[in-house]
Length: 466
Image (cartoon, rainbow, N blue to C red; front, side, top):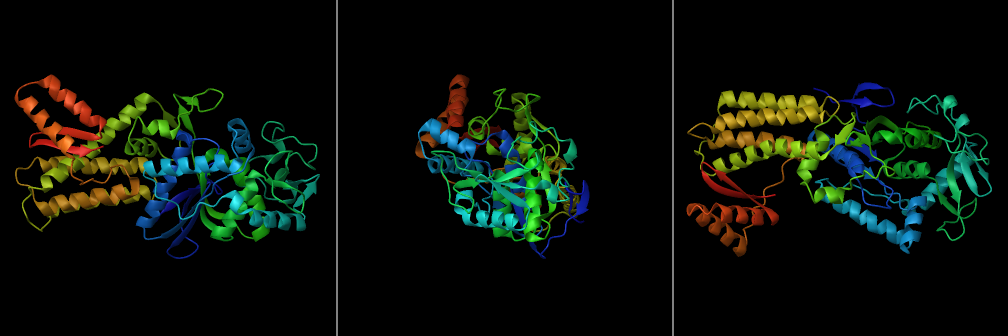
């Protein structure tokens, strides 16, 4: 099998080959930190986490960069509204982003560069563009000459000549051409600024990623990712800037995830239908959110609704309960180190199918199907009277191999219950014995609030943490 990915640049699936053997350099555009991240931000966060983890499963050493835009018009506005400094606002929401990422089971990136910490590199990048005639200054602002870069539009496949100015391109009389975009913005009175050859100001949005990607990953990276909405103009402008300065492709493979809709409507501030991740995590576990996002191919639109989330919770429950039953039966399984040949063959086929689906453009939706195939096989095996330890361990190993990539089942927490919870569990058992169903249900609900799930099985009562 060979990993194939759909490359936005070529509009086709291509076999993946890294620049350096055994190493992958990947850059994904991070947030502009003026508010809490929403479900739309969570999609690339979780999907590219899976991409990174799967590449690591294939034994690649992945250098993974996510940037923070920590100075911007929206951050300045937020600072003015809240009577805080720009850096205070940025720090608040960077911390919130990292906390949400952690709660979503996302592995930390290898680097989180910030615009304000790389200002010198950004200014030098712009200076090179100006010196080569690809950019020009006008009254403290600096613009990029798009008509000088002949391949402008090649990533997004936009017909640049037919863009509707004022809708997709900002109209500005200081530009030589309406298609030109800003690299350096002259500071307005009272705004935060940095000194530059063109006067006090701050960077435009597009230039920051070009400068930081070059600094941390070199002239050409393997994978550049982000949401579909970033193809144009953001990523298109990155290409134009970077390929002029570096005389090399910015990225060999471009991956873009689809939009997230809310109740079949486009998510937007004007509709007030956004769902932030902090709010979502108070309603659902991280594993349910990951299941919801990964159960649709990353390139397709994703629709969020309470009904769909409930379905995701129920479906995921089948996987989680199966693994929980497997763990429970392991405790009393017959001690035998020989895996049954027929079972081994079935499991190997399921795992092979899982990898085949992941290597077909990171098809997580079909990869989840492989987990359900393993659930069916496991449930059949658990019906047997005699359970062999080696067989269960082989099944558990297959689940772990898939779960390491998808992150749909939380790791077991083997900490002892505290005395209060133990007493409640014992009390519930007595209540059931005395047929006091109301009290038994009350205790179950109380423990649920504390993150303890109780399960009544043919083998007795068991508990697990949410």
